[in-house]
Image (cartoon, rainbow, N blue to C red; front, side, top):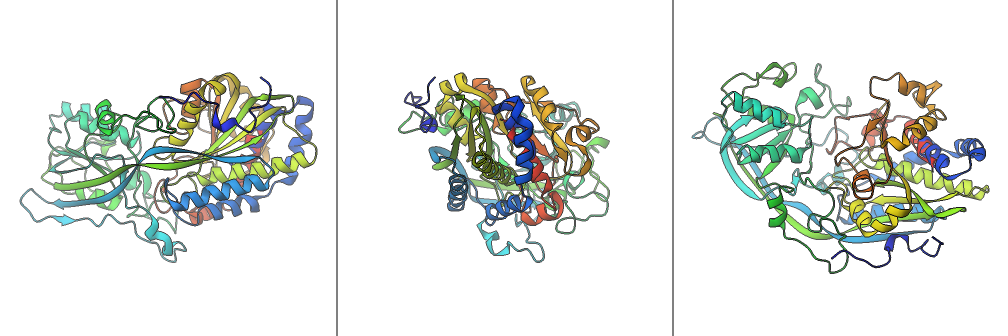
Length: 544
């Protein structure tokens, strides 16, 4: 049953009656009087440092730190210590949730069902002079979290991006998916939906690979560490769970001896897959595609320059796929800090970012974590200069986001009534920095505040103009709309209707969820001077 006791995450303020610059600007607009905004915003700018943001990111990305691991507990302690050192009352709130880890996986390919099978090694290669080579063994083997354990053997069918319309096109072309293995490429929809669509079409297993056209650099073939693109052995790992929060406690918090549903029941709902799947590199995906015959795929289903001609199948390429996973209850740790408001302490502006990463997580998520910590330290300095927020600021560092927004969703479920009545806004910074260009999504209530904050922040890539001036000249919609899951705003928007914002510098970086998302990639390609990290922290604070 859902915990009805006093909300545990607000215990420090319960007695109260009733990347950076853009973050800070957003926070200040939300939490101080209008006449003071300019003064404190200018003061914050003078206190900020890109060296601090870089230092935090370096510390957070020393080791891979997947949810439930000792390394992630160390990262949680780092965040807690940083907040506490900034004189922000902070604590850890833990939940026991269902996580998923690989035990065994294998994949082999035959040119036909009777030919000898050639196994894939399923390894991401260490790049030359990789400073993290010594800890590469700590990275989990490439896998899909919550993938169905099982073995499948069958002819291969190519399904483009694995969308509903792609499977409809296969059906229209009289290509039989039922009883076969689907190979589809990342890039258009969530991987869990790719596997689900394959299952609904009758496939017995799914392979999802990173096509070089989308991730591998296209013409020229340059990749990390010599360019920003995914190396040929790079693999995008990730979750296939299609829900929010702990799969065993849908709608209530995973606290104490709460009621839980079984994994079989979750699978029956379609939120966890009923067929095995594996992620694959561009090199291995292309090897499979070379063995497929049948009708030539449409032009927009084809690969880039140098790729083979993509055909639909089935076969004669034949694969044997095995995956064995371990779904187990593990403790996750949210780190929560509270700056109590002066005039409206029972009104909350919540700033959140997750900490857990599939590998090193320099972009996703720790560019956001470093921005959050930068904000916390600068807000502490503002407090020493006499500043006090009008409303309370809650700083949240979530755990287990990568598995399906588990940490944030459990926290929202655990504090549903308090948040519904007291939360003013939620600001999320996940992959805060991956390149140039500012991007924002919001619920409509916050559109004008976003624009106002952007007008107060200098563009880190063009000091001659404001962020807003660069933003309106971009090729992207000015403000997108929040929808679906995506990241940790979901529970705030969908469960309690809190106005929310998600923002970032850069979009769709190619080494996403691979072992190459490390500090070196960020330092060379994402934010070489760490100016975008600082700009991001300014924006967030202006909305509190």
